[in-house]
Amino acid sequence: MTDLHALLETAKQLVRDAAKALDAADHATLGSVTDRLIGEREVKLVADKFLEKHLLDGLAATGIPVLSEETEDSHHQSPDSLLWIIDPLDGSYNFSRRLGPSMICVALWQNGAPVFGVLYDLSAKRLYWGGRDIPSHDDNGPIAVSAESLLSRATVCTGFPSRFPAKDTAAIGEYMSHILVFGKVRMIGSAAASLMLVARGAADTYFERQIMIWDVAAGLAVIEGAGGTVSLKMTHFHEPCSVVATNGRVPFSMP
Image 1 (cartoon, rainbow, N blue to C red):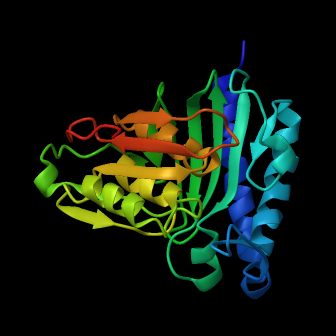
Image 2: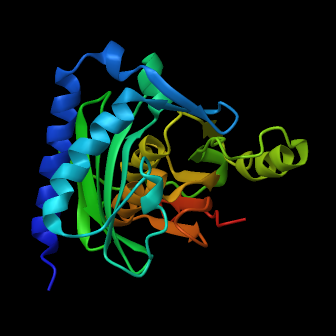
């Protein structure tokens, strides 16, 4: 039987250690752009590979396969297996410009669903963890989703990921028709950080299309552990997906 508690503690310590290693390194070097992808809408940094190596080295001892954003050969892992899903640095552009939050993300998934997630907010220097059967916490104690139930007063976190057809005016219009039912809309440049806002009750819903599973895998687990609900439309791990995560009270479902 898999010892989930031991795996969770391993992931927590590993993510903390990765954050410390990043802090000790030179930000100017780590923030250097190594590549620009998807019509130059997505940047890759020295920090992405720096953190990936740290995480992969630490997870190797568990013997569990790893799907990593930064290693394309790993993107065809089977969703039916026990699997680590990592995004070494979600919000790379934010990190490179000191523009907003960025997160180190490690998730354990099984049978195509989250078991637990561990995330570290590099701006706030705060660790988050939790899962469906693991009450969610941050460094200060338990966290929980909000009690808001009215769309007119609710906040949605969203964004236009690199793969979203941003030049398609019809697609933009259709998307806006869904998010403008909320009282407030926020875009902060990191799917993982957005999900943590929902998990700790600062926002009420997260909705995004054409996002990749590694961007949301850890955050979805923590939202479940914080009392929220998640909905995911995904065909394969290596293809973009659509995600809705809410406090379970706001009347918003996958369009």
